[in-house]
Length: 214
Image 1: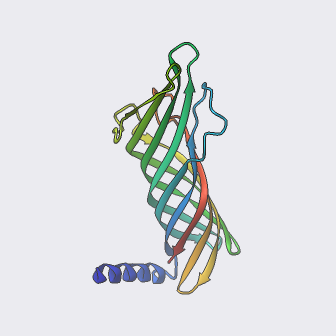
Image 2: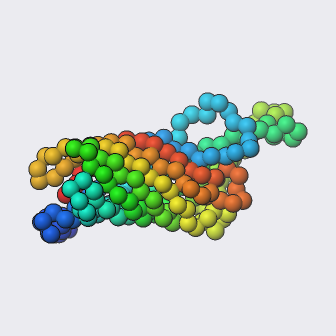
Image 3: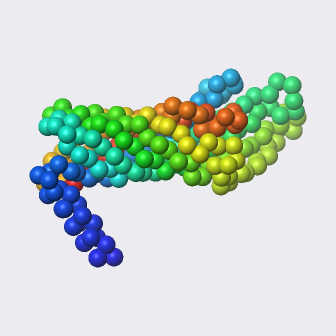
């Protein structure tokens, strides 16, 4: 374990020193609200807040004094809940809870404004797992029944690839030899998670981001 930490320290130190600080590396984590769009259905107005989380390891190449090119790899977890009402059946409504997992490769540019920065990115998100639980609530006897599809693969109606737009807005605090990052991360998928599943359209989210830059 000690050798792994030593190797990580040496890699970060090399990146920091190489090419007169042309290269940099950063670890970012964030958590916040996540959801997915479901057009064409009626929803319960106050269905509660769903939380998502993500983590990214990113590299940067300094193009000018105020502009970096960024490339990274990371993990995104998007959670969503959907209520669908039925007017002419014995089912009052269904509640579908979905947890989506993606491996994401984002690329973009980082604009510096003093200690603040703006980092728009576009990513390739590769579908990993989708955990689904659906509960049906019946009108007559006021009972419910839950059916789970936990761990359904991306072949179960989900597209293998989606393209998220990602926006990072934050500031850097210099605490030598590293910088502490703090800001906001928001994202929205340009295409649908599924073409056939009505409860999985465009995912989106916003949350607080923090991290460390080497």
